[in-house]
Length: 282
Ligand code: PAF
Image (cartoon, rainbow, N blue to C red; front, side, top):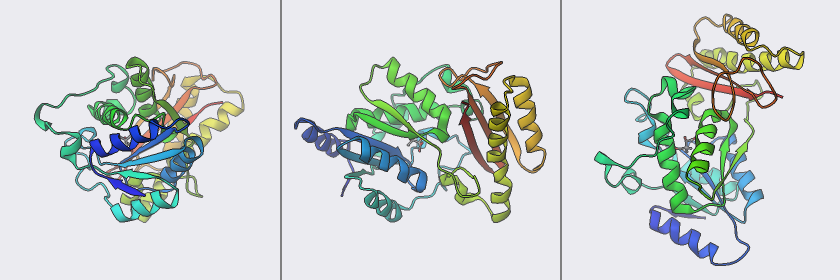
């Protein structure tokens, strides 16, 4: 596996492959600190494409001024080992100046309305940063498919809308949430949790499972499902709810009645760590 540092190198790699018929390129965009969730994305890309690129880039524009950009885990050697083991062909790990050459007045990509919903409400500017960097990665790698986790369900909605609006040729593939044995959704930010906070954090997946079971029993009313999810959180008073929502997955607009495909999403702060979890209701 090669490590590529510049957009020109990534583009050269991609174009050389495209010149031969039958090749397909899968891109797995990440911010590094790879865990089993990322590994599952790389495996899906491996299964769906002839060639796989993994990007490792802690994207400054998607962090707010008081967020964890500086302390976000950066473990390049360990990330290389995971990407190699899962069969990635290239790792794209650019410097910030490579993706943002004119940082003071950079061009930005904005999906205006969706970007302000769900996580966008408490993280202003976050989805503009995500849409911008993913557009840059798509332009550089020209992937046939790009792989994202369902855990970041609002991000998926924003990126689906962005690729549709810009008529980009890349297909967005969404892979299931990967969980620890006790139910906690994997996240690079779980590394911030103390042992007792990690126990408290299980309340997110418990709320998700609770709502799924109510829906399985036939409950469809958003008011009931949301109130019930709030009730679950009462068991962990130190966990601060950021949002609990039942929304249409495409528009991220609240719904009154859950239907198949409705997104149930929770976001909460455990200590200073913001965690998210969700289910697509069936
Ligand atoms: O999901 C992530 O890790 C990031 O938001 C992404 C898509 C790699 C963009 O920086």
